[in-house]
Structures are given as structure tokens and as C-alpha cells.
Amino acid sequence: MSREKEMEVITSPISTTQVDYLAERVFQECIRILGGLRRLALYGKLTWLPSLAEAAYILVLKEELFKTVREIARELGITEQTVRRILRADEEEVRRFIEGEVERVDEHKAGGIAKLAYRRVKKERGLFIREEEMEVLGVDWALRVLVRLRGADFPLSKEDLKKRLEGIRVKGKPIDEIAERMSFPIKSPAEVLRQIEEATR
Image (tube, rainbow, N blue to C red; front, side, top):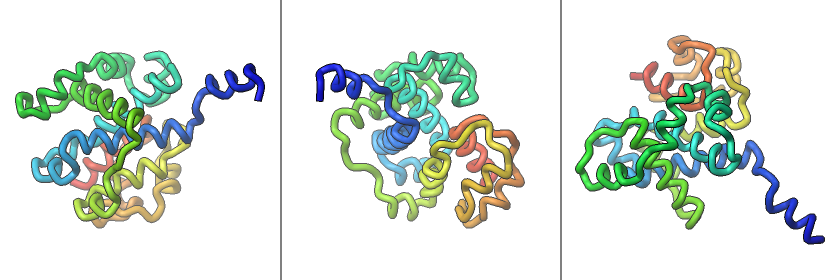
């Protein structure tokens, strides 16, 4: 392979599928950093999952595809202000949260957790949460939904969502029933998770 050809391979951007896969891994690592799904479930903090998923996508789009704040906001269907807040998040807040000095995770902390998770994923390509563990805790649906949404064009209509998530059950309820309680069109994967969580409470 010539030097020019080699440089071309090294600098070519990663594919959409790779971005989705990396964002999912960062999302899983965020959960590990927070002590695992069991800890989140025990403390009633599963509502953090949508914010963490959103932060994971924002960080991967910024770091891997070098997208601008405006491009990320447009792609995920969120405000530029939200993107900026997540990208400006301080990892020191994450340390303080893990050590018990801070109780809540907001967009700032979700961004800090995602930054820390992204660095770990890039560095170690380590082990992630087992699917069985997620199933026992009743939150396996979040990962299954994210996997099914790979490559989806947003915003999503109700019909698109039902087709992509066909066969998935969340907390014992079929996706068709859940979709009837959701608002459409849906602008981002994070919003899908957030609405499903709200519709199944």
C-alpha cells in the first residue's frame, strides 16, 4: 500500500454504523462508571439513561466525526445550547458524584460521565455490561432499542418506530401499546428512550 493510500485510510471518517456502535459502548461504560445498572435501579435513577445516551452520542459525533455544535444539534434534534452544555461538562463533577459529594446528574454531569467513559472505551476497549444482567434489572430494553435504531433517519414517525422496534417489550408491554402514549415525530435516539421510560412508568 502506498504512503498516500495509507494516509487516506487513516484519515477517512468512521461510518454511521461505527458511530452508533461506539456511542452504545460509551453509553454502557457510563453505566459502569455510575456503579452499574443495579446501583442505578436500587437508587431509582434509571431515568438518567436518556441523558447518558444523548451525551454519549454528542461526544462521539464531536470526537470521531469532528461535527460542529450546530451539526450535532441538527442531527440529534436537540438545541445547540444542550450540545454546548454537554461538551463543556467538567469531569471533576463526575469524580465528586462518584465520591458522593454531588447527588444529582444533570446535563453537565452526564457530559462529564460521557467524556470519562469515551476516554476509557478508546483506551481499553474493556468489558461491558452483560445482557443477562440488564435483563434481570428490566432495563435490557434500552440497549435493544438503541441497537434497533442504528441508521434510523430522524425525526421518526410512529409507524417508523413501530417497524424498527417490532417485537420489543418494555416492562411487559409491547412496543405498539407504548407507542400510542408517545409524541411524534421523535427527533433523536435519546428522546426515544426518554419517552419509552415515561410511557411505561
